[in-house]
Length: 422
Image (cartoon, rainbow, N blue to C red; front, side, top):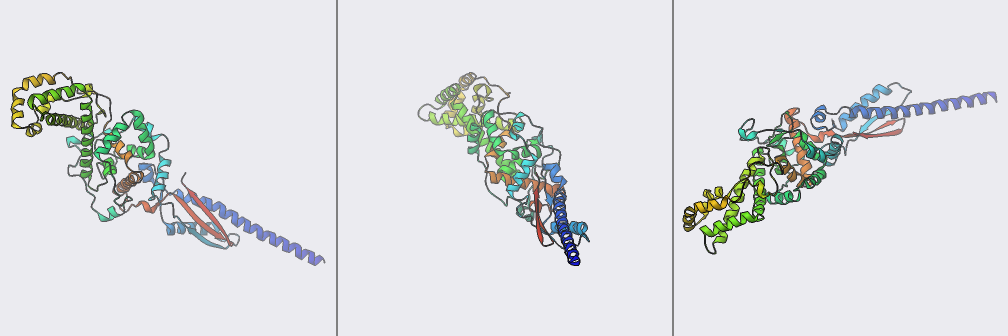
């Protein structure tokens, strides 16, 4: 009986030791697994973080699995007789190239009220490219098919026309309207403001492949110069339409246009001359507006009479106007030049004003009006293009991850781990 008791007692002790060993191995796996998730996540790309405040690490399932196996072998070798089959990493769903994951990473890096920071002040520098300094008139063109085919956007279409910009600008005519549009884009607005250049202002002194990066987000062409020209056309169309509205809303301007049209084109054709003069005057004013925008000055959305910069006399001297008048109207214009000049002097003009939107803000209105998917994908394009240009020729967002998921099997028990940047 004593032998049986001792044998039973010994078996209980052996069983307790076995259970304890299993619990210790399980506990160590849990502890080490959490540690290893942090170890993998700590391998984030410093250039992505420094340049764009985005945390992501380079890798793939096989590479991460190999790292985990090496950690596992080092930590559990000859430890308590554990039977460990190895690690199995599955990173699916954490690709930085997924727009949803990119947005999450962006919000982590650019937390806070982005819109208020944009409106309350900016840290951008005026480029003064129109002097020719630092600007390649030919522009850069991305031709490499591999670079183009691996861009996150894959040539996704979508833009904003000049006519749409006219309506957008009117709806965001005041600070509250602009604030609302910028708030809708969130961290993407702040990323553009702090990290990317446009034709008028630059964000930093880092190397950028494209000169017109904001313009790329709107147009999406691989030709840098084409993006610039496209946005210039849109700005002209929008400003011309808004200036035409301002003319017809100003009784003094309408009176002068009607008086001049009746003087040089009597009869029913005078209506056509009125339309011609109004359009030509709006276009002349728009040329001044575009010049102001490209010199980082502000242009009101809808101008008051005191903010108008051109007079009707300059319009009448325009060859474009003369070419569209018939011979009789041209003769009357020459005969009544002094009288018409006297009419035009009724309206005073100014050359400087502080109210309105600058080039950055007009472009930001267009960017915020793009569909969310187009805007985010083209921003991702720019990051990939610049990372290739600055650091790694083979940089691809799909090879970077914002989180990790893996399993360990020890002593027949599976341990699952998952973590991401927070």
